[in-house]
Image (cartoon, rainbow, N blue to C red; front, side, top):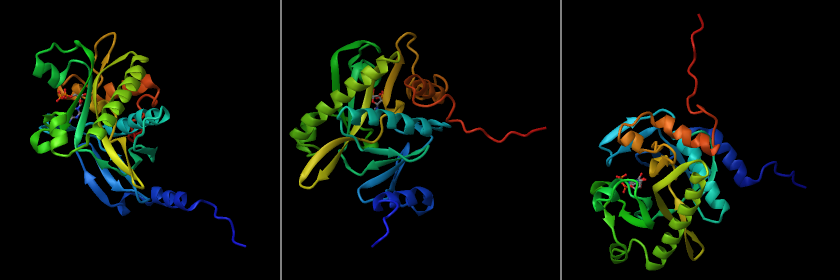
Length: 274
Ligand code: CDP
């Protein structure tokens, strides 16, 4: 008779992996705000949130203490909520303060932007005053290419260049609008207006079937969030437009959503006792 295995095999490997430290991990990709490492199981990835902030296609850069910790927790919160209401995402679970385990997927080379109010590039492009409510949510697509500055593209370009099929696009719009409804309601409940946001979509294969899931991150780095009462900006525009302390703004969002205790991002430094 064989002794029962104290931990199921995949869990055991995950357990060892979490304690193995970063040294043994293979880096797959380093982006502006995140690093991706090979995960413990085939088909998984560890997503590490950095404190780096960039804007204007990386022309403006800074390191903002605590941003990675907040975005890890906020992205976990949004993705978990989406999974709960049946919107598939890549999120599996959070591993620690800065890392989460996600499902590996093939990223569709598009940034999907949903807008409820005019702001940023839409306000500039169409000459609409920032803050004007749009007649209905508008979905836009940008081709993911930093060298080109992520240019706006139409469904014609997407179909012609084969970045996604028409069927994929129908699914992508449906997913984007469900994410919009979910996030709008969630934010409204804590006195925040969801002006616009960006998501990325990944493809996963289940046998012969392909499915599209929400990937990357959902955080104040990729949204515009305005306080409903005061209009205070609680998103990356604080950094883009030098409006104050970015960590304070993101902490406020996390606090209102009940995501993490106040100031948990600032790890206390040792104090000299005289
Ligand atoms: O932010 P900017 O004015 O350059 O671009 P936008 O097209 O007005 O951005 C719309 C929304 O998508 C904002 O919430 C941005 O934060 C987000 N976005 C993003 O997360 N990443 C990009 N590369 C472009 C936009």
